[in-house]
Amino acid sequence: MIHPSNTTSAVAGVLHEPLDAAYFETALHRTQDGGLRPGADATELVELIQSGEVVVDDFRLPLPCFVGDLEIAALSSASGYGCVEGPLHRRLKFLARLAAEAIDPGGLVLVEHPLTKDRFPMVPDVTLWHASGVAQTFEAGAIDGRKIVALLETWAVSVTVLPFAGHGEDMVTGYTFRHIRNPPPESVDVDGLQRALWQLRSSRPEPLAA
View 1 (tube, rainbow, N blue to C red):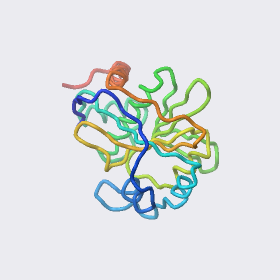
View 2 (tube, one colour):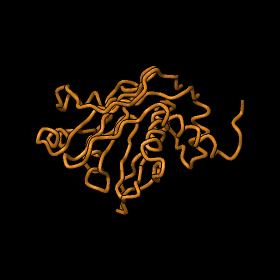
View 3 (tube, one colour):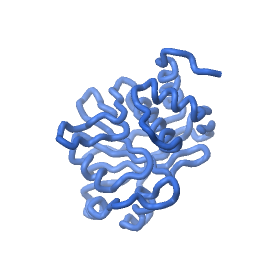
View 4 (cartoon, rainbow, N blue to C red):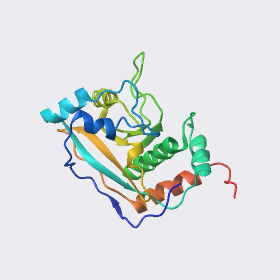
């Protein structure tokens, strides 16, 4: 469930932890039950970061007002997605959707939509298309480091990850990966998230059950 937060903004700041493969095994590959995602590999991602080609920023997302699991499931289904997944992954993906809507209220937000037209297309959890024609992508839960590298080679100017390990009582902490030439991630405040939540609620065709 999502709880109120006294924090007013999602602050993006440079990480200070040692960015090695072992660190990312915990930060990115850890599953909800505490294990590691099978076959995941962050070697190339770490090499790109160490070379300075890719930058990683903190992404802290304060949680808006209370939203229960049933409402998240209903809003997710009404928005055209809602694959078989656990409630925590669904919640993180829902928060990524709200963050995208808050970052650019006039942008096009797509959930689980192919970013490329390859035979095996890249499908981010959430994609935010700006009017300028560039995209920001968001991933929820455990993610293979190689997918982050692959996404940065497409239209995506950044990949923001909200991992299982980052979900807290009143804050979700994650990471934004970007090429050095691209700007750092935008800050998101609670008011923006609340407006995005209200808009999503108001777009649902039928009222939610009490």
